[in-house]
Length: 170
Image (tube, rainbow, N blue to C red; front, side, top):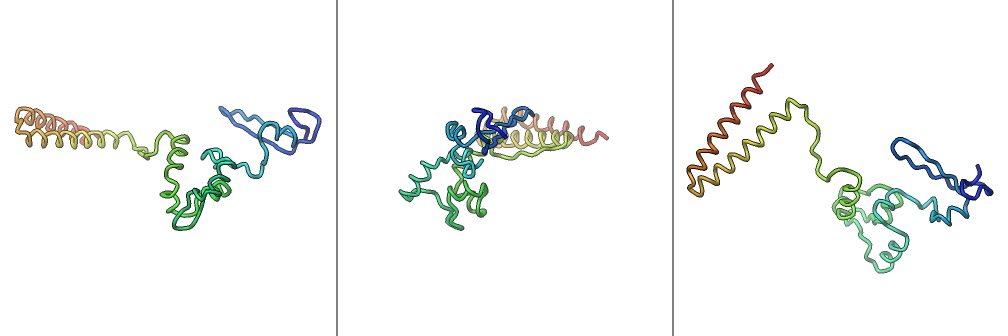
């Protein structure tokens, strides 16, 4: 296969990028790959890109001894870069800061909320509303604001009725 850039030498580096279900492939010779910044295709890993670990950063961390290490298994950031996975369950705590940024860039959030069938979602919404109203009712009683407490009591009664109507539907 010929290099896509210089169209003269044999391609030794093959990069594939998928954007919006369209695949783009670039074949580079050794000279062009170095010119484009792809120096060592074997050391090129997804984990290093996502964590932002460069070889200069790793060298500095290894020389100063500042590299983060898992206390349970001894796994380091450079080990994670090479393997693309963590060594043990304790690694998640040891690399928490780096993983939080990584997960935020990959997912919408860092808290899993899961999916719930629509019929159950309504029930959960009512339950959450009830908890909030009961909490506010207790706060109003503690402050001896009985007028506000009465309005929260009425709101709780109304939510319970709505909940019962939803549960009674076939």
